[in-house]
Image (cartoon, rainbow, N blue to C red; front, side, top):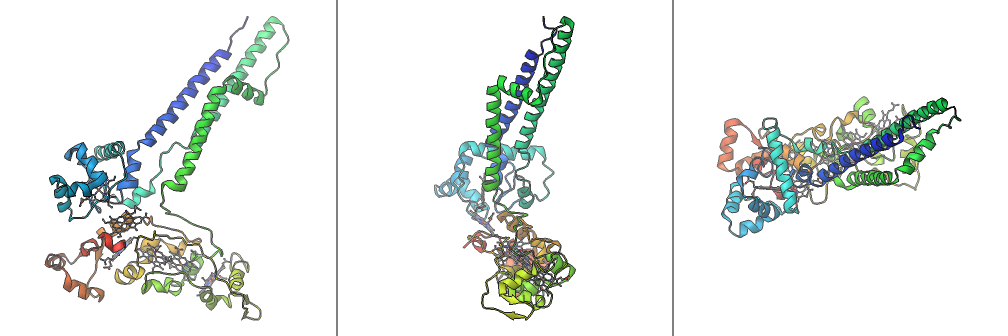
Length: 421
Ligand code: HEC
Ligand code: HEC
Ligand code: HEC
Ligand code: HEC
Ligand code: HEC
Ligand code: HEC
């Protein structure tokens, strides 16, 4: 007779736990499909806040009550058709927001429902907490709170351990039982055997869990590769371990010494190896890497540091571009650095502390637009504006004289064509 048979309880417990894990996993997946927040951020957030702040378009707080659902479907999918059809409401919205067209959004009705639910929840959750919610901050948080595959793996391991412990107890019980009956003591299972037998007797569940874990791994890999497309913090390896901290920080070399075209042209440019030689003809060893890294400059220029002569086999250093705006967006350094008088660090962060070049700002459209909305241009004593000031419409001239400030956006800095050819 068995004293206590633990086999059945172990199996039951295991099955219950497996079912729990399974349902957690699948609910997360369902949620991910319908995740209004994600949809909102990838399709709408570059132009709309979910609250009341206007970006390119108006804040979307309240639109779910303000308009019929059917009207919203048509508007979001094709606002231009709706305006062209003469729909009064659509024409009114269009006129109200200065006749800026909202591009057609590639979303279906279910996705629009999910987006609207998110906007509603967003406003009900924190109506007052919206502090000029910047798109930049939102983008950074993207991909938070995902069920990580590691988390699932941890649960699976924990389950296995529970089973192994139960098996141990079961074995002890059997030993006691054998003692009482004075039979031979059964042999103990090793850890591997215990796990092996557990998997054997629960094959289906393990196979299913294996598939789920695999899918989650695949999904997170996919998201990382394609999902976000924002490369904030991007920090590629460079052919020479050039350190801004050492050059611009410790040695106080001015940004303009190496990136001087930023002040007069569109691009800031990366200095050529010849410019490095202004100093490195003589500085042949560095504090951290000795001759190793500096000799790569010499290799590129076919330079002999002993005779100080250049050979014929020169090839450019292939720096990896850190910042990459898509071709359809236009950005001009001199407009910002010289005319706008914005410090490099505002957009690139504390470069003088970087040992490796990296992308600091998200470089999204929302990031550009936000700054254009918030930044006031200082026209006085800035020759560039004398003529622009003359051409300003009367209302803006008056505003400028009254409070002395006009934002970049009021000068037209959020018109699509300013940044898109
Ligand atoms: C490229 C910019 C842009 C994108 C992206 C965009 N919109 Fe718009 N949206 C606008 C502009 C501009 C308006 C103002 C109406 C006009 O002038 O046509 C607007 C108006 C609206 C309105 C009417 C608001 C009101 O208060 O009357 C709704 C609703 C709306 N958008 C929803 C969305 C949703 C949902 C998405 C994402 C699926 C989205 N928009 C994506 C630019 C955009
Ligand atoms: C001694 C020359 C030198 C000085 C001084 C210097 N840089 Fe650089 N900078 C480089 C080189 C070389 C690279 C390319 C390697 C890299 O990305 O780290 C670079 C890259 C960069 C990049 C990334 C470019 C890309 O690929 O998108 C930024 C932004 C930048 N510098 C800003 C600054 C700022 C701001 C300062 C002043 C605080 C500064 N640099 C001072 C030489 C210099
Ligand atoms: C204005 C002078 C100047 C220019 C221009 C300059 N450097 Fe330097 N570089 C220095 C100084 C100073 C050191 C530090 C030497 C030391 O502390 O011993 C240094 C050190 C280095 C080191 C050694 C790092 C280490 O820790 O071992 C590398 C690599 C280097 N520079 C690369 C470059 C490259 C690439 C360029 C051109 C894009 C460049 N430098 C342009 C002044 C310069
Ligand atoms: C208003 C924001 C802003 C300011 C201010 C700014 N940059 Fe940039 N910078 C950018 C953007 C955006 C890019 C990406 C441009 C692209 O990919 O076409 C960039 C790219 C660069 C690059 C890569 C090479 C290139 O020209 O594309 C360097 C180097 C650089 N910046 C240096 C500087 C320096 C040095 C200063 C200060 C003198 C500065 N930047 C000021 C936004 C800014
Ligand atoms: C840190 C704030 C800031 C950021 C970020 C910024 N800008 Fe600007 N931008 C300005 C200021 C200030 C001016 C005003 C200079 C002027 O009057 O021309 C300006 C002017 C411009 C202009 C000329 C506008 C006009 O009316 O002629 C363009 C185009 C432009 N920015 C594009 C961009 C793009 C593209 C980005 C993002 C990649 C960007 N800006 C990011 C502050 C910013
Ligand atoms: C101040 C500069 C600026 C203005 C104004 C601007 N854009 Fe953009 N836009 C950008 C930048 C920069 C990107 C690239 C963003 C990225 O790669 O994430 C972009 C990307 C886009 C995209 C590609 C989708 C995406 O999010 O990457 C569309 C579509 C677009 N803009 C439409 C518009 C329309 C329509 C307007 C006018 C209502 C407009 N933009 C005004 C800077 C601007």
